[in-house]
Length: 199
Image 1: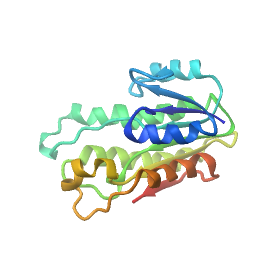
Image 2: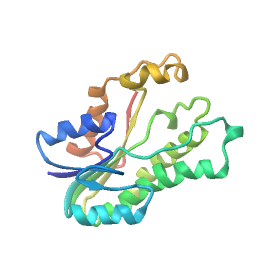
Image 3: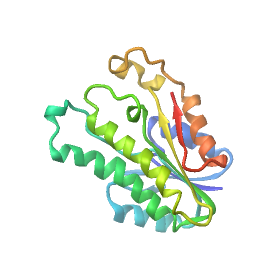
Image 4: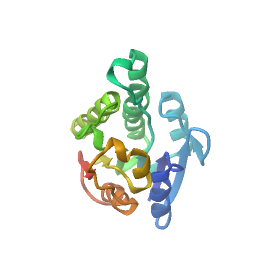
């Protein structure tokens, strides 16, 4: 398969990239470095990146940001960070990817545990993650040519446990190998419209 991984240079992205590169042709895209440069908050950037990539069998998006702050401190603009990046960024990746995917191709998006188990200061991030889950369940009803869309929703990862442990009391960190399993299931499996929870 020819696979485009957006956000393949991040902590999780590197693990995902290393796995798929063993068996497939992998292109890595990032905002400032990679085989291609793609800023998912800019639909023109997404379009240009896909045009350079050409036909694909799978797209994995492990990118997007959202503001963490107390509800009283979040401005309308703060909400738009997550809406424009993590939410509409991944919607636009899916929207544009469908034109570049071979029949039976797939798109794998990324959210996180906050959609189901929010913690303080995550109103914006939780909202965006939940919206993506709903998007994935709905968009597969319209896609043609056997194109599949799933979303991997990671929990607290071991690599970030020390930094975020106080936000997630009682949560058992998951390993990178457990995280990776969600992406393998989405890309190499047959599931469609699934929220693959790793927690």
